[in-house]
Image (cartoon, rainbow, N blue to C red):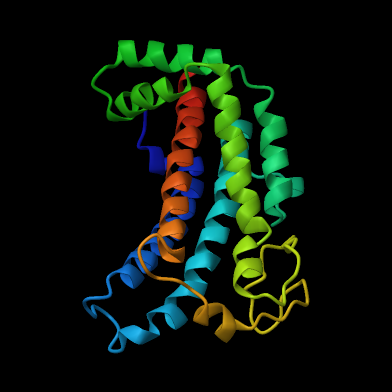
Length: 233
């Protein structure tokens, strides 16, 4: 097997993880309040970092879903899958996944590992596959992924931080943070948003870091599908 990232589908994975990693770095930088590594005024951390954190998480989710679709299709991204609606992209991924027998995925990966036990990719895949030894776990896994995706698709954090936004948004083009105007024609009071961000322990930034950790866990699912497609031939 060639290097995972050398594969054409590996580019999708690389971009998705890159957006998520930069969001994590920025979130961790906010939490380090006892030192100023890159900014002279640490009081500006929220103002200068929070918006790009959310923007990159939302974009990472979009690319992750497209990565999952591409990995299943194994034939590039089709025209009908090139939208930006996170909710619709999840449904498109879910519909494609229904055609996959995960028991077969497990069998293919287990067999490949037995034939090549020193392959680093297969070692990782063989360990990750153990997280999904029952159909119920797969169902629960996808249910939690959908819940997290909808949280960022509907921008629930805006409703919590800006009382004037009375309902969750349907960010159908995933561009609510596009400035100066987004597709929703929704004007966000950025100063009020930033003012209400809680950076203390167990506050908003810690919750975001927890979401990022969960998203990184979901990337292993894409990796397993990739390994399966590589070895099922």
